[in-house]
Length: 372
Ligand SMILES: NC(=O)C1=CN([C@@H]2O[C@H](COP(=O)(O)OP(=O)(O)OC[C@H]3O[C@@H](n4cnc5c(N)ncnc54)[C@H](O)[C@@H]3O)[C@@H](O)[C@H]2O)C=CC1
Ligand SMILES: CC(=O)C(=O)O
Ligand SMILES: [Mg+2]
Image (cartoon, rainbow, N blue to C red; front, side, top):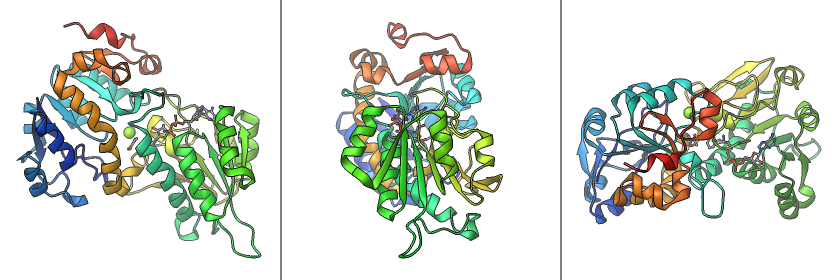
C-alpha cells in the first residue's frame, strides 16, 4: 500500500503521524511511505532520518492526498485537508466528530474511510490509542493549571503546594479515567489538596487503595460537583462518554460563583468540553476569562510536548496502521472488532452510533460496510 504522512497544520501542532521507526516497520512489510518535507523537523525528526527509514520525501500535502491510499495523521483534518480526501481513501487519525458538525459533513461528502484513533477499543477494554495522549494531557493539565494560577496569567496568585505555614491549594478533578488519574498523580506530587470525582465507584475504590488519605474521592453527581467546584482553586475536566459529546457538568452558574482567579482546565474540550462556559482555544492563545475564572481549553494539549507525544502515539497506532496496510481496510476491520470500533465515517455514511446520534445522522453499523 502507498501510505502518506502530511505535515500537521493545526495551530502549534508539531506531532507527526509516523515516526521514522514506524515508517521502517511499514517499509519492512513491503509498503511505500511518502512523508511531506519537514513534517518532523520541529521535533528533531529530519527528512534524512525518514529517507534512511525508507520513506520518500514529497514537497506538498496536495501530492500526498492525491496519491496515497492511506493518510496517517495526528489531528482531525482541517477544512483544506478534508477537501483533498478522495473516495475510498483511508484516513487514520484523531477525529472527535461528535462536537464537530462541519468536519463530519466534510468527511461524509468525501466518501473516504475515516478511522478515529479515539474510538478504537482494546482487547481488555479501554481506548488504547487515546490513552497515551490522555496520559500526556492529564499530566500537562496540572502544569497548565499551576502556571495560570500565577497573577501574570490571570490567576489568583496561588502556589498549588503552599509553603510551610500557608495552606496548599485545592485541586478538583472531574473524571477518574486516564486524564484524571494522570492529573491526580501530578497534583498529589505538588502537595496540593486533591478531590477526584467519577460516576464509576469501582474506579474510585482503586484510587483510594493506591492514594489512601492523600486524596478525597467523591461519587459524581450534580450536588457533589457543585460543592467541590465552589471550594476549588483549580478544576480539571477529564470526563468521557466514548465518541459522544461531553456532558456539561459544570454550569455557567457554578462558574459565576467560583473563587475569583480560580482556573479551569477543560481537557475534554476535544469532545465539546464539560464546562458550560468552555470553547476551544489554541496554544497561541490558550485561555480566556469568564466571571474572573481563567479557562484553559486547548484541544491539542499534547502538541505542546510534541516529541514525547509523537513517540507515545506511534507506540499505540502502528499495530493497526500495519494491519490496514497489510490487509486493506475491509479485511483488517472484519478481522478485528476493536479496530472496527474506530470506523466513524465510511463511503458517505456515519458508522459510529454516538456520532450519528449527536449530529442527527442516520446510523449505519460498521460491519455492514465490509462487503464490497
Ligand atoms: N485536550 C486535549 O488535548 C486532549 C483531550 N483528551 C480528552 O480527555 C477526555 C478524557 O479522556 P480519558 O481520560 O482518556 O477518558 P477515560 O475513558 O479514560 O476516562 C473518562 C472518565 O470519565 C468518567 N465519567 C463519565 N461521565 C462522568 C460524569 N458524569 N461524572 C464524572 N465522571 C464521568 C468515566 O467513568 C471515566 O472514568 C476525552 O474527551 C479525551 O478525548 C485526551 C487527550 C488530549
Ligand atoms: C486526543 C487529542 O485530541 C490530542 O492528542 O490532540
Ligand atoms: Mg479537535
